[in-house]
Length: 398
Image (tube, rainbow, N blue to C red; front, top):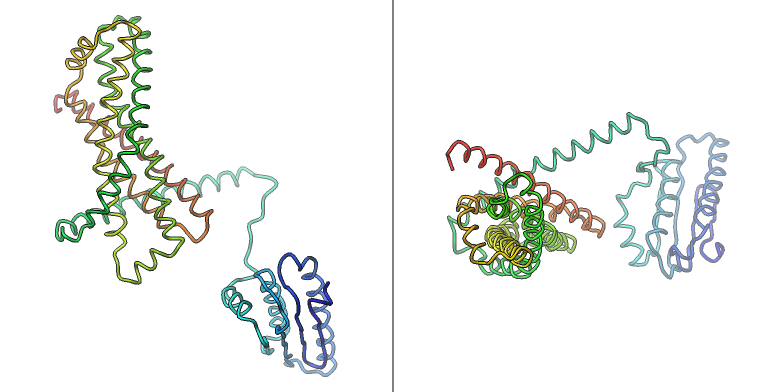
């Protein structure tokens, strides 16, 4: 097979490599090792000749003839780069000529021109020492800090984008915003409503069974209503939106990044923030309150249906207890959380989408990171605002 693919001729100060056939991965097999060995042997012969002649600065001429190549791929080009490096190592002043390169060969050679064959590769460690664990923990902490340090910067860009919308409202992509609002809201209504309904029913069942033991059975409906309005509604909605919408935003923008559409937009002078980020951000600002309100109503419905079916409480009585036990401030607390959570999720999703590189693995990685960050932010923001409003409510400020 090797005789059909190449012929190596070494004479005087010249090395000629004549190629033919299909230089593709399926045909190379052990050709690389054999060719490199023969090439090194040829260089050794020239080195001995150079030592005999005493010409320390003697250079060689290396010519590769590719007119008979039928097909070539990147694996072959990397072999030829290795041969070229051997020649350069022998003498940096040596001449290298590629003769009659096919267009396919020349194109691959240009694309791999900057590829470093000697770049280090990570080696798997068989034994993990305590210092390795500490180093990995430190690196993970640093990456986490860098990831969340981006959020204030992104928020600053969002505020600037809002200012630009107020200054030039006619330039805002209203049609795009309405499209994203529809895509984020309508398909999510069913899943948000059904999940909230079931969680409301489960919480009510647990409260009815547990609370009477503490002598608080009269507060079951009011307590469940308050918990549903303040906490479970926004938490469930935020998590569902993070898993559904944030991942979709990252995948959309990441796919545009992979297809070089974003680079084309920049070349055309289009503002990525204005065309891609702001319509999605405004749509998310409108989507999350709508879905949160639907979640609250669905949670109340699940609680009411369970009490009617299991404990024969009429709907009129349930509505009356909810009306007396749930204050407008409880619903207002959930609604106050929505803009902070919405902006955090959409900015993280867009940011991760813009980080995607030109491969599918990068798209999957950043989509996963987007969902994880969004879930983390939903819980953190909900906790901070919930504690704050609980405190000011305790002191009579809300």
